Length: 398
Image (cartoon, rainbow, N blue to C red; front, side, top):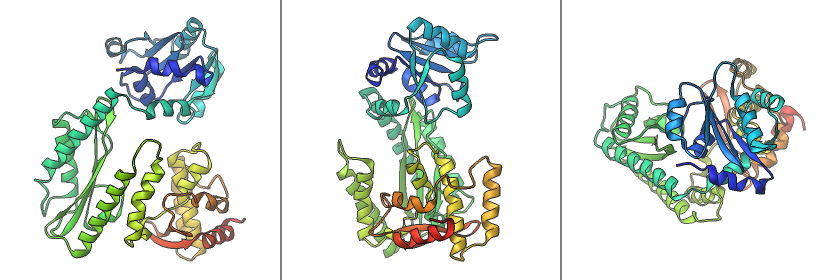
């Protein structure tokens, strides 16, 4: 299964002669051939398609890639040389590139050495991939069927004394046995008090009777992913647990009912979130400036960098409120710098409050914000937008 033709047919409308695919996900979408990381390059043009890889993958590529000329890199003839030959053969002069994922270093290398103009094309590729064809839907559905079978099996194995790590390991084992290629992501298993952490990492904590166990897991089948979250109770739930569970179930059903062609993801999320808000649990959705930084940049700032900068903002705001020390902020910034992440926001936080007004997690005239007390301990606090705007101005300047 490949999408060379679908991509090529969209190029003229975008004013392009071709598109260069260096990221593994878009390469797979175009060619139907999976190779890791940067170990391959595809070029789709209006006059023909090309796929280049190294000696580790060439045999598999020759077997699996159809509708494309295939070449192998070697000493003295790397990807640039192969691509320039392909550009000459196809006559492509204006080619798209994956502007949202290509590194600055790679862009500079291609810009200086390719005999073509590079034009941002991530938006085009997103639009093409968003609408799935029948073959893609079939693979996605099969991935979900595998995930559901693993859930059915794990429900017979969850009992007091079993650890979160053991459940996570068994989930992966079952999905692989039922036909998965690999996991969509590392499974999340959170029991008891750990359930309040949306992206908790499974621990050695033994599950106890009367607790919720939340599992977030999925697998890859035919290159396509499933992703499912389910919460179960071990033993008899309390009335409060039943009330929360029923609220979340109603919210899920509201989101399903709102889903139809032409509706945005934010609208579907809003339908579900409104059920939770009306039930009195709206303040349990925390937020920080990370997503606002992403949105304000038009998603030019990557998710990891935006979250890192948002953490610094949260710490500095917490300092102003007297919730955490300057030493805590300094420690955080030092760790971020050591990881190559930004330790300052790219925009004045006061200017980002207006972006938060558009956020799906807002409720009325305020938002529940995440503040920091010390490493490993955060605080959720409901704050009106006017107060948050004044706090950011006091901390960072208008």
